[in-house]
Amino acid sequence: MKEIFITGGTGYMGARLIPLLLERGYSVNALVRKGSENKVPQGCGQVIANPFDPSTFQNQISPDSTFIQLLGVSHPSPKKKEQFKSIDLQSVNASASAAKHARVEHFIYVSVAQLPTKVMREYQLCRAEGEQSILSTHIPATFIRPWYVTGPGHYWPLALQPVFKLLELFPPTSRKAKALRLVSIRQMLQTLLYAVENKPRANTDIIEIDRILKMK
Image (cartoon, rainbow, N blue to C red; front, side, top):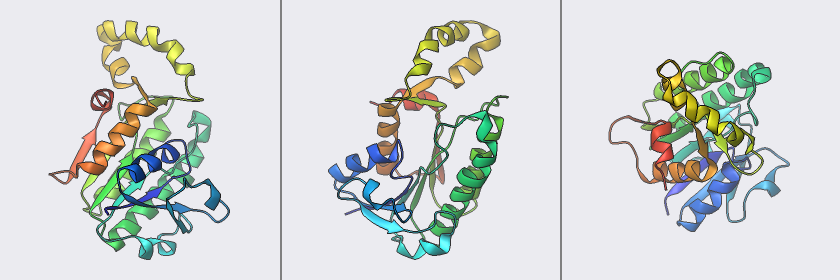
């Protein structure tokens, strides 16, 4: 069975992705902190370690596996810019180092849309730096760049959809409105499954919002 190593497996996306991977016959191991073992979906292996210290988990990653990095601050907001550095960036740096040590064959990273914004600039910068950290390993990588993912508990932005649709029609705001469109949790899960099953032919595949929205 193809092996998957995942961080953030108990989070909003990870807890939904793992059962889908198991259904498809993948062997999945999730990095968890001590005390969170019971939060991992049934059938998933557990690697109890420190996500900020690669030496605690790098030897438990299969060299022919796919590494999925989902760990990050929940409910990102401008008030959490220091957490973006101490959690999001630190964890992806550790994961990139561990993946390089283990010689994994594919690294999948949920990043963020990179069209500059004022309100979430720190978040975008940290995710962009995370991408560079992964690129420095020379591991074939897939970067998925949503803006906001709607789903259970995350539906409120849908009320703004009519406004965004109008902004898309006007040249001064069209480009940014289209670049920051909402995607659903279902579309993100389908995108992640696509990434797992399609290792980049070149060194890097970047999946922007346009492609995420087309995932069925």
